[in-house]
Length: 440
Ligand SMILES: [Zn+2]
Image 1 (cartoon, rainbow, N blue to C red):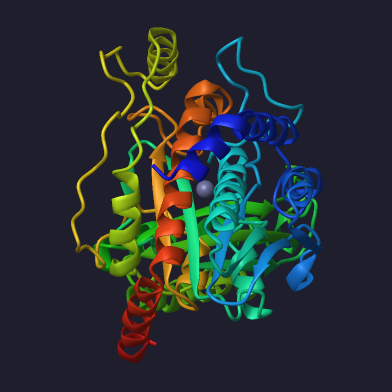
Image 2: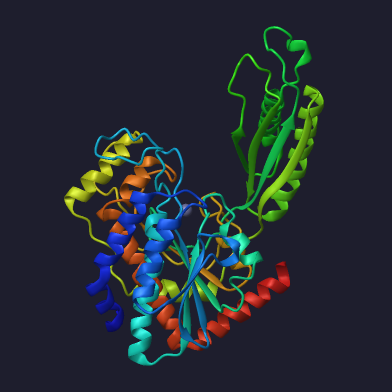
C-alpha cells in the first residue's frame, strides 16, 4: 500500500470512527441532514478543503474542493438516515425517539468518502501530483432524488471521474447495475361525508388507493421479469367515521432497464385512472423521481479492483462475530462460524444487464454524466437485510467501522492509481463516450 495513504489511516482513522458515530447519533432524514453535513465539512475544512454549502439549491448539499487543475475527481458522500426502522428488539440497540437510523449505513458512507479524499490529498502532496479533489455532499439519497437534482443543477459538471461506495455484505467492485426506477405520486380527490350517517354522499380517496394497489398486484404477473413494484401511503385518512376525501400514495416501479420501467409505469397510470373511475374520485399524478439506466465503467472497475487487492480485508474478533450472529438471530438465522464475509469477490468484467441487488440509487444520475465507479465492502453480516434495524446496529459499531475504513482505503488507492496514470482516466472517458453514443 502507498505509504502516505497508509500513514494517513494509521494516524487519522479514529477521526472517521468518531464522525460516523456522530452522524449515526443524529440519524437525520432526507433534506434535514444539517448536522451530518457539518460533521463531514468540519473534517474537510480542517484539512484545507474549500467548502460550499447548499449547492444545487439543496440546503444540505455541499462541495469540498482541494487542489487545482485536471483531473477532477469527485467523491459521492451520502449521509441521510431512514425513518421508522425500530423499535429494535435488542435492548443494547437504541435509536432516536422517532426510530430513524442508518439502516443503509450512510453514517459510514459519507465518512468513508471523506477519509478517501483526505488520504489521497496526503499522497498527492507527497508526490506532487496535479489534480482537484471534490467531495460532493449528496443529501436525500433515501428519497432517491438528491444526486439527480444536483446533476440537473450542474453540480457535477466538469468532473472526470466519480467515485462512490456503499456499505454491503460483501467486498466487491459493483459490476452489476442498480435498478432503473420511477417513483410516482398519486393523489386522489374524493368527497367527505359521515361514514355511518350518509355514506352514499361520500367518495373515498382511500378506496381509490386500495383499488390502485390491488390493480398493481394483478399487473405484477404480466410485466417483464426484471420489474418490481411497491408502495407506501403518504397521506391517509385517520378517522373511520369520515369518508376520506383525500389520499396520496407513492408507487415505485423498478426494473433491470429504463424501457421496462417506462412500459410498466404507463400501464400503472391506466390502473390509477381505472381506480378513480371506479370510485368516482379524481386522480392526479406526478413522476417524482425518474432514474434511467446506470452506466458501468469497466476501466474504472478494473482499477478499483486492483486497489482492493492492495488492502487486506478486515479481520473480526470473536466478540464481533458473536454480535453479527446475534443480529442474524433477530432475522431468524441460526449462528454460523463465518457470519461476516472476509474475502474479496472475484472480478467478472461483465454484468451490465444484471441487477446488483434490486435496489436503486441516484448514483445512476452521476454515472450518466461521467465515468463512475462503486466500491462495496462488508459492513454488515452476510444474511442481514438492508433497511433493517439490525443493519443499522452493525453500522454503528466496530464491524461497520472496519468496513468503512476498508472501503475508504480502496477508494484512496484506486484514485491515486488514476492520478499516477492519467491515461487510465482517458481510457475510462473514451469508454464512457462510447456507452453514451450507444445508449443515451
Ligand atoms: Zn444506501
